[in-house]
Image (cartoon, rainbow, N blue to C red; front, side, top):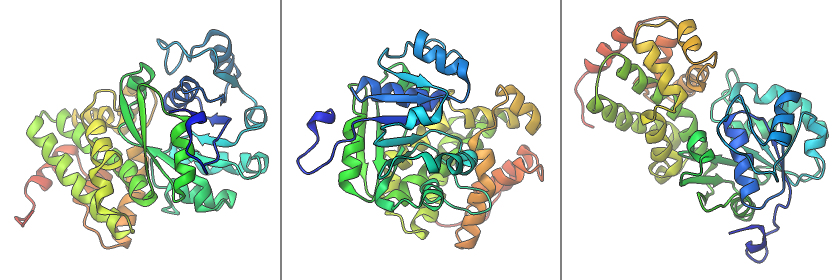
Length: 344
């Protein structure tokens, strides 16, 4: 697959801008470059952009990965956006709105907007594609979501993985699919944006629970139980909001959930392990090199979304209470174990 191979009737996307040079933003920019798609990576700091452009390295996030010389980089957002037919938003979920408000006046007309963020916005309870549409005025057909079992470090090292490009417009999804298809990165399309986004957002919270259980000393049976019951919670919530049930059995649901709950590369799992070992929120953040896991920031919003739709999400609620300091990890673990007996 390549840009040149797009089916008849599908307009190819010939130039991308990736806004955000963290591990996933840099990795996705590498994927685009490896796929033969012209791409410019925007970094907030000049020294990061210069290192990517001149040394072909992102020393902070992917120090051991050689980046393609075709990957351009800049600290000037206007320069990155110039001539772009698709703009990839590679920012933390809770910072997407403030940055997008600044960039919106400079977006090229008719540009495709692609979200890599996984979360639910605090306060508004909007999914990331909804935030993008609200801020930019873009139609649903002009917004796509890339999600799945996509641990950045593994993809940057070109380990085989699959992903989902979700968009309500099939042809637009196919255009993004062809722009980022490589020998190691296989994208599938899916029209169910709601299910794909909620799968990606909620799995971070379940991964916190799995990490916490591991930190408490529990083993694989506990992890498997949390993954399975967590998937049930995610599915109930997603279907209540209009998602297709089968979406959650695929890459954007089960696939992403298993990878994030099981891998030592998962920031959310590692953060949960720190809480399970008895560290405070501040100590857990320090242990994660000053980075707060996305599930910590989204668990309140996801829990509130579930309450508004009268969906039972005991694992999400347990994580929220631990993160809020209302109960200890050990106390909430005992509560979950001693819930009333019921049919699965």
